[in-house]
Length: 119
Image 1 (cartoon, rainbow, N blue to C red):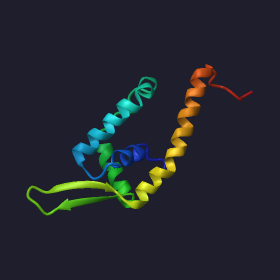
Image 2: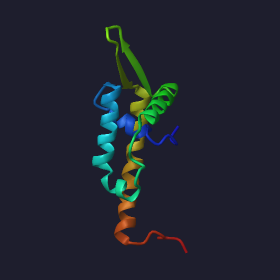
Image 3: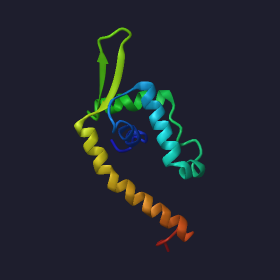
Image 4: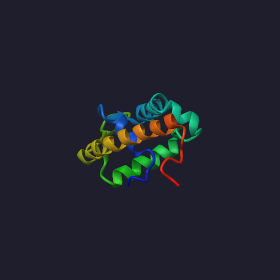
């Protein structure tokens, strides 16, 4: 489950509430550019979410029960994606891990020693 690279980003984008596909795609892309601007420079190409990747990620997350796809019976159809309770709980569980990773990434960069502790 946690191997899916975009899963936390999608859950984070859905935190405020349900989003339509295009708004979700934009929210994830914007989050990655503003939050991970340094990471983008260090790992070029990693932080750009393509339509096909988002489609696969959403399908996987639906299968895992982390989000639901709602289709309103209007014309034209309006489809939104929303995090489930399990999805919100997973995001809550991942937040301390993300904070830890950010602290230690900064420590590695500040120390200038990427091999700290290895001998």
